[in-house]
Image 1 (cartoon, one colour):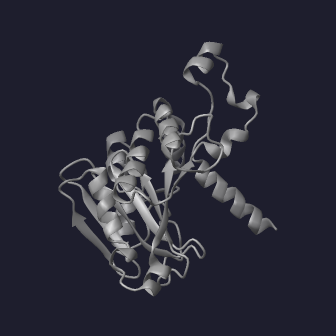
Image 2 (cartoon, one colour):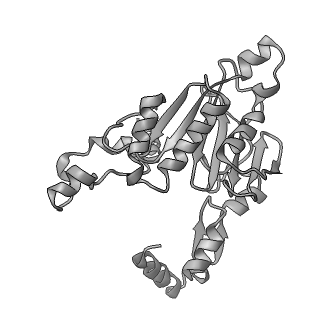
Length: 277
């Protein structure tokens, strides 16, 4: 938390107002304790709470939703399914969706990726969450196990395959630099471009790429799409994205305002426009 935010929360408490922290992260308590501010909140609702209540987590958390019942069960309808992945530095969050309806077929999270303590928590709706240990722990091992849980992993008939097979994977990529202004179909050139922007997001882009390459290794013919956090903000005018710094900082090192969390902004703005019609 920023110092100003901490001061504001303290003012609220001094005024007798109760405070709570809401987060979809399972590391919320650890972060608050490390920052020394866990005593500022009367209640904590986080990823552990969501897991206990069998609510959906990232990338589409239901933590704040009052109507957090399980989505309707079913195969997701004809036309196939799409796997959405958010590969982080030590976790992989995922959901399997029916693109036409948005129905979630399964979802989960793999944590401690890259270590022997890696574990996979997965929920196939409407069943409860199941936890598995993944001793190998690599991104490829984690992705391979996730893909092994998909409905099409054990399909036997053509009719089953038509309604439940995987037709593509979408990946959240944090930084697209100045090149990417929209989502793109992944190929070798796109992978190289994402890698070239890794210096702008060193904790995120390499992990995002690891997820893409892991899916490629297990399902080499599967179409994959990269969705960039920065793409939404690429319409900013030059006066808005440039900083008052020496020109070489921008031309050589790419120092400028890019904007982040664009996937969320795009959804919020589109949904707001729908509600205001």
